[in-house]
Image 1: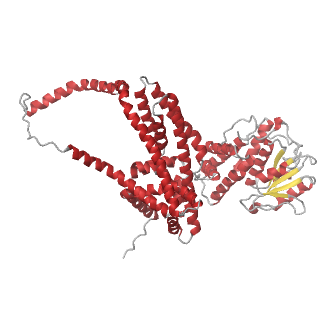
Image 2: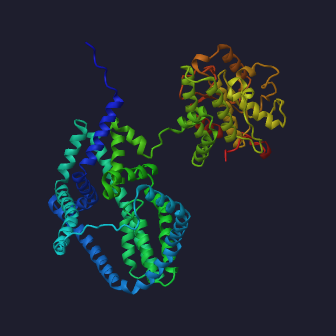
Length: 633
């Protein structure tokens, strides 16, 4: 007997998703009014809470909020109906202008198309005529033979009044039933607001009341901020458009101001519809096109300012939705539920994002729809370096450096990205091609961010990678530029700060980055390796013992520490008794302190700590011409 293969988790999730979509579509007649009522309950919930703080009970507070909302809608509706009635009485006076504008538009569009169609028809006329004559001759049809037509007895005309009433009732019944359901569900939702919230917390959280409460509060706060911000912005849009249209001399500007504010709640469709209607009326009011163009310009200018200046500042990350997800949500919900789905697309998607942030099984919703970056800056640095894309890394880095320092960027981005690469390299997950591409990108990025003034840009090749040691390659490049030649310059004797890197590639890179940051701050700093300390003719040979005021030792990993390196380091430190010694460890790996216990020294675990500690040490300042690294700007 064969055993059935276990079903794939992905297939199960796909079936669940399809089932949910089917329920949303098939149950839209019930779900749409209930969802609309729930959204209105969220809008009125702050007013209910405010009335309850005044001492009213739940029932009185809910009814007061409903009465307040009804009065607001009634006043706005009455004012709008009065303006519409007045405008309808004035429409016959605009008939001549509208006919003239429509005639002009027809000449520019429809007539031109008809003329082009007629030309194409005349070109094909002879061919069609000859083809029809040939077909008639082949079928034996006599064109002169009369065609017999069937006639029917006249019937009594239908009762047009009854048909009109039936059509009117059918057209009104659907919206009236939906409005009635919405009002009924809204009333009971407000009356049982506390009970419904408790049931929702129990349903979502089970025994974990804290997590469910956090999710419900997060959704409520985000929805409240969204509705308040949207209402404030749309109210401002209505006021500004009303004032500008009144200044232009547009009759009944209040109508278009109210429509612009109300229809703007419908994403992407409502505001253009209001603008189109206003432009059409403006074209009928004025004999020329000036008022129509001015009206269109008012709507366009207000929308551009609000959408690209005010809303990003007011909303910020209040909703937590990415711009693309708002567009996709509008398409998705409008396809499922029509115009009401388009109206509710943003609140519904916001609830899905909140669910994704608090329910682990729905975390993919937050990743797909939320505005939280899918990858951290360190992960983006690592991924782009594997792909050989230095442009995006530099763009992210320059945006980061506008807010924080280069030392912070090295701590938060560069070193964690290198740790990711080191872990994958230890597991043999990186190919040689990816490794070479990553090394070239990292050298290019770090060289740009810490580039010397007026240093030429260079393209790193495989032969320039210095055996894969990025720190030594960056040091060689810096020394070559400072010396003005390709060879290694003679050691300067006046270095006040020595950065010693132990025998470790990450230590070499950290020490070189520290030197570049310090020289960018016009501090005299120098990078030497621990092997060069014992080299009589090497990099440390010409150091002036009295000039050294601070020594920073970048520790190696615990598995890479060498006893001979520790001995050479302590012998050299003994020659600098006046220097302040600082030991720098990596916060992401285990390192060993190779400085002798009897030598007093400070310990730091980041670039920021090291820079802050060194700046408190009185070090001589380099001349402007000798300044090292730039700021990456």
